[in-house]
Length: 62
Image 1 (cartoon, helix red, strand yellow):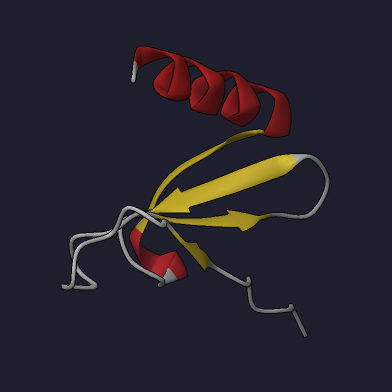
Image 2 (cartoon, rainbow, N blue to C red; image 1 turned 45 degrees about the vertical axis):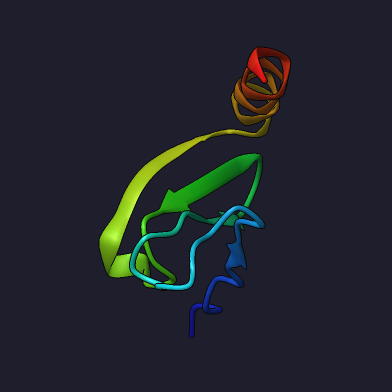
C-alpha cells in the first residue's frame, strides 16, 4: 500500500481552493507541486534543491 501524499496549501491562496498551489514532499528528494490537493492533478515534480532555489528567486523578486 502506498502512502497518500500530505499536501501543504500555499499561504498565498485565495478563498477558492481551485485557485491555489499545493506542495508535497515525495519519497527521496523530490517535491511535488499541484494546482489542487489531488495527486491526479500533479503539475510538476522536482528536486528539493531546485524547489528551494525557485522559492528563493520568487522571494527575492518581491
